[in-house]
Length: 201
Image (cartoon, rainbow, N blue to C red; front, side, top):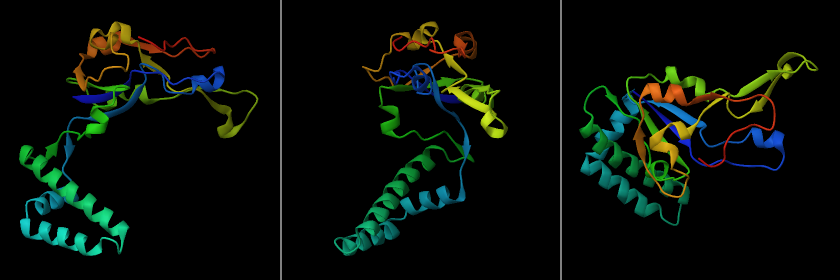
């Protein structure tokens, strides 16, 4: 299974050319797999989070550095928070892989939603991350490829019942949408401007 971050709210600009390059409702912001290998660094941090002696030493060092080196204090705070977080997650996922860890700020932002697509790999949904480009006959080399829209394809959320009524005013953390529904909702971005992408679902 993969998970996609899908925009629920459009960004807009009065200039049609600039507007086309902005994130729009139905654009996919990110695609991630639901299984990732534990890295050695994550495993070490998880072990640290369960070692009370070492964690207390970190907290003591932080106390000493307050008012002396604020940068080091912030670094220690981040290390302690990460170690505590990964210790809990490692207990929940003791195998060789773990799901993608979304932060609360990512899960709770009403301007997008995390869509789970069962039985589908990250690569199978990667086309939603491609920008819309055209060949510019007046230019050469890399300048001949011109981006004209933020995404080459997007999701028509009116065709996805779980997302149709979500407009960025109320947070829903995640939904599960079958592959066939995702496929039927895919729309290729028109390359003539202004683009016919809805700003409200």
